[in-house]
Image (cartoon, rainbow, N blue to C red):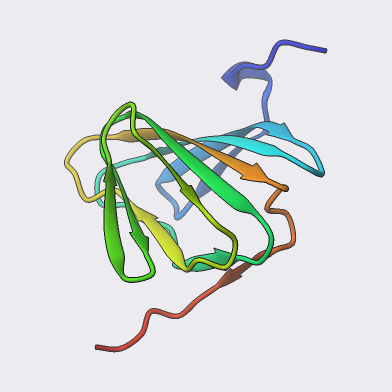
Length: 118
């Protein structure tokens, strides 16, 4: 066992403005901490096998799930089942800080999903 912190974890940048670190990344479980500035978003995608659990530590995380919007205030959480099309966004003016827990790990089972035309 070892103590994990931002100083000794794999750190990455996504969408050029957001960042995250992998707190735990095993074959059966992933725990990811992410920070998303105002106006940032992830591309709409789906996980073939992974359940995702989102927990918002700071700010308001918006999740588009199958065409509906979910707003997770600080302290709020939700679970997404496999194969649910979704996209996380920060439509607020403040930083959003959140955890994503995936079971099993998301490695190799994520694919992008185009946004339908309306």
